[in-house]
Image: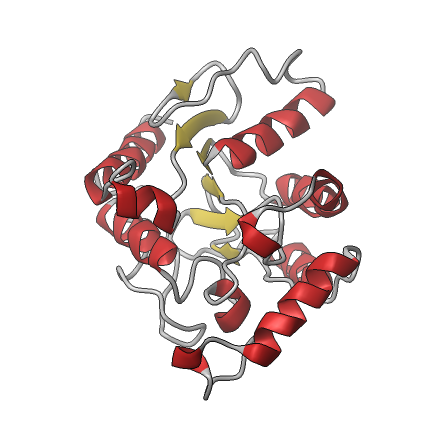
Amino acid sequence: MNCSNSKATNAAAPSSSGLATLNEEIAGCTRCPRLVAHCREVASVKRRAYRDQEYWGKPVPSFGDPAARLLVVGLAPGAHGANRTGRMFTGDRSGDFLYKAMHRAGFASQPDSVSKDDGLALRDAWITAPAHCAPPDNKPLPEELRNCRPFLDRELDLLVGIKVVVALGRIATDAWLGIQRDRGKIASVTAYGFGHNVLHADLSPMLLCSYHPSQQNTSTGRLTQEMLDGVFLRAADLLATR
């Protein structure tokens, strides 16, 4: 089901200025020396295919519609994707899978995301992550996730319309559930299992889990485009009934 007619798209929201301020703080963050050094090194050395491009090379802000009812929680920026382009899930294979699925479900204006100025706009959706810096080997350390968590906490207070959360991967799921536990909404993280297209409808907002569209998952067939499409079509259907 296409959700693009379910509400005004890209509508102004009271939280818009707060989210913009938060994104500025994210981009300027230096709380994790290991990650700061890694992002800068990748931006300096570059990948051969992108050697003529200027890399972003710092924490990547969140992205989307401030009036969103759907929150997408990823893991962390890709070293030569978002860390290069400066926008979540932009410029790599993970983004290719994600935005195709979001476009088919009505959450994205186009299926491709190659640069910050390519015209992509999200409708009724906001994309964030528990880690805003590209980590070595795509593995942020527990203390780095803790350092980044206040950003996600503040984001949730500003995104007042969220009804459904799509968590991409186990780390995203655990990060989201951890916040719900610490806010007193659930008693235990382990009470809520992770699996692809598993829905926890008893939570508010509802939590819909998905495998992460990492190259490791998509190249091995653990996650197919059809599987990811199914998650976002389900999210659209859930929002249509809210």
